[in-house]
Image (cartoon, rainbow, N blue to C red):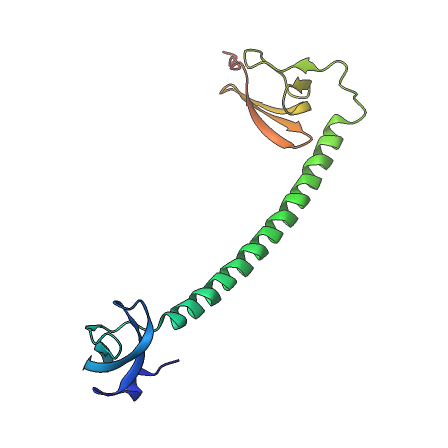
Amino acid sequence: MIHIDDYDVGDDVEAFCTSCRMDLNHRIVAKKGGEIIRVLCLTCEKEHKYRPPQAEKEAKAATKAASAKTKASRAAASAARKTKVKATRDEAAWVESIGADTGDHARPYAMSESFQEGILIMHSTFGLGRVKKVYHTGKMDVVFRSGTRLLACQKVKLEQT
């Protein structure tokens, strides 16, 4: 790694040449506040803004990419474990909810129907499920093998007293 403080105006330093499009030797032309500002390419003899060698940038990018890849793989593994645990819990809740029922008397699900808590329904996508809770807003929680889903149903009419 280059320590810019070690160089003065007139010294040679490796830098990326914008004309040659490669890392080449350059002569420092200007410094400001301890930083190299302008350099002169010793190959094409053009003066331009100092740019660190591409090899340094690529090494930093490779390190950053490897770090991101490691973080992504850890996150994916963690998500897979959580999903597996959640799926196991969901299936356990479904088995507990369904019990010994085979689903022979399950009502087919339709959004236009009204349902009561505790009845079995057969959904075309999610399969056999038991109504866990019915809300007066026209929605209900149903426990399926894949998890609890919020489904639409006919609104419950509130009793007037």
